[in-house]
Length: 124
Image (tube, rainbow, N blue to C red; front, side, top):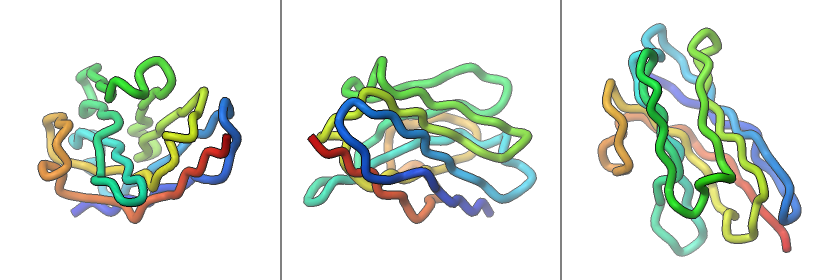
């Protein structure tokens, strides 16, 4: 069982940066692939980024955030981060972190554990 708690969201202006954090419970955090998803009003939850479990250096991003967002993890702190730069109004959404054992995925239905979400609002 893994419990996830996101933090770091807020209201920013276009061009600003934010860093989201996702703190995970459990002693096996390093064995989980982690993902960030987002859901804008009236839209489906979409994949944003993933990072592989400890020992594998694999990350992936949706095209719309490549070069602007960076996912990372600190296994000693049981935390995954999403550094967001050059934010745009279209990045406005509730951001969720998610965990699944071992293998990365871009499919939300393949993640077993979810946080409660943190709101990111980007004004123009």
